[in-house]
Image 1: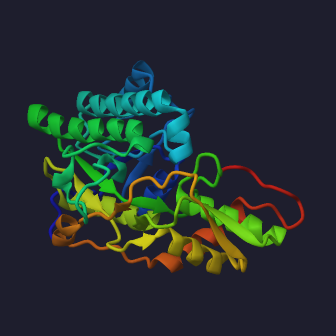
Image 2 (image 1 turned 135 degrees about the vertical axis):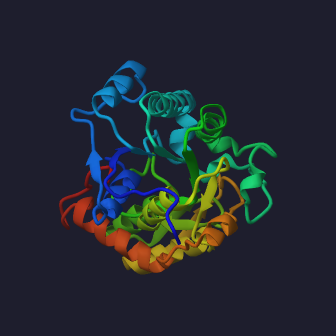
Length: 324
């Protein structure tokens, strides 16, 4: 397929380069003929003056906007104002800065929580704003919806080649394994690992185990984003998913198998389930010519190996650091 946008020789800024997605994008770009430009020292992207000043001094051709305040149900519930304010400021400052400083291409990262809680499955891009959001992550969702719409608005008003991508639940190297703020898959990996080390008889899983989720390895996401930069230039955002879903209970069993935990699973029904089902309709991306390639169990095994090497303490030293 011929490129709509030639990436070769471009200067690229990965906003959020120290996060899981940002690092994956950097790994994906390592084999490309591009120059990655990063702020040093770090810039607070919530600060418009600081963001604009850095962008003025460091002109780039392409921006991957992956910077965000992220977290699971517990973190969203405890910090609604921070999740809404910080994400609104980050995306508004970077997108306006990109327009002001002549960035040729920008891709903004959304989140699958933007969709209505009871959206028809699988969820097509057209389901946006057709019903109430999931209350446990609505603040983050509102900010991400605003970012998607900013890209659309800047294209309409200013002719900017700014696009938006909508990934499903992500996992992989450099994930957040803090049990208070992580998403379900890394939390399960850490809990299963610690239960195995402790010789525990059971592993407690939040909720009923019945909600169904789709998971995408972060390296697949990075590949899809580079693909979209080259081949997509439209005013609508694009779903990115694996096309497969799994009940949380079955996911917990898969994680236990990968980790080697042989005890029982116990479901804590006093904890919230979140959205009952969330599978993305990826027909648009399929039509463009891209599909994910990492099977879930293989990806979980890879993520666990990274956890063991980078987060888990050596056997017998107690608990390790809270984050990856």
